[in-house]
Image (tube, rainbow, N blue to C red; front, top):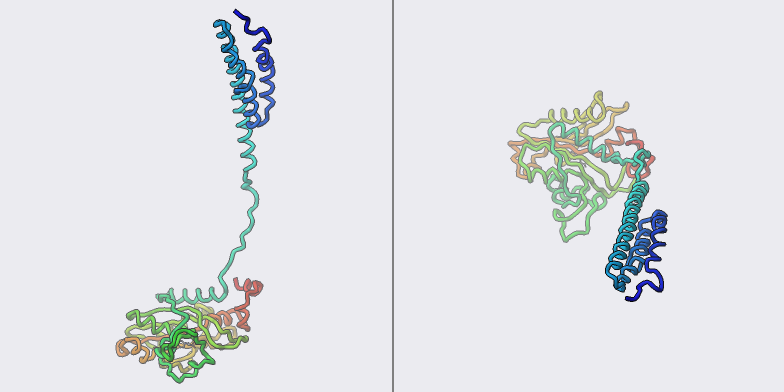
Length: 345
Ligand code: DAH
């Protein structure tokens, strides 16, 4: 039988591996490095892999078995050391990742600047709330209207000056003329007719919204502003109800000691009609238009004027805000300058 290990001892590189592996494994600082070292120490091309392949050349069965066992023992020992190191490194890497991701919940937050309603919007909301607390509902309607709802249904004659182009903004929409003509509503009153057409009495409704007029901008005019319309229709409504309701509104909005007076006026859609003035901040000031619903309007919408009576009113939201806050230039309310607006947060 030929000696098998006559040129060099095949266990020789394994001996040096055994003596250095432990220290090398401990020296590795990451799992990635450890994976590379594992291939080097116990992989197919490692001295252990080579020694395993060399086993086939050992002819003596006992010697082959002994060497095979020695190789396996060494491989098991080295692999166990690698696994232990891998567990340690995984724990370290996880701890470092957690530390890197840590959120300091005790850091002061970045303050979020809170927005706020514009003064005109908060004025509308407040006015609407006063009427809601009296049992009124809230409706809204189209800003683009027809001549019919904006004028005719409200008993405003074909010849009325407000129908003129110099007062009303007409839209270039469709072929209609007169009642069919499309325009930007000049007041919220058209919703009186629209609401009554679609609801049976009793009616207690307020309608806030934008209105439009062909006005030059100055301290008291804007081409776009806001109104709040009111309408009450029931079996036996009188002018006393109108006065009581609007006096209550004025006291709620301007303060308990606010006095009001009603001065006769003319509106085509109410009869009789009045302007309500209020005494506030030391002077009488005109607040709104109002009156008893004209029976002609009831007839337009199919309400029997012998059965129902009602009152209506319309006020400008910007005007209410100006009177309450002593604002003298309407343009302040259309100015986006936050220094103006923040005074009325
Ligand atoms: N629509 C009127 C305007 O814009 C205001 C008004 C007056 C509304 C009398 C009404 C009312 O409902 O009864 O000037």
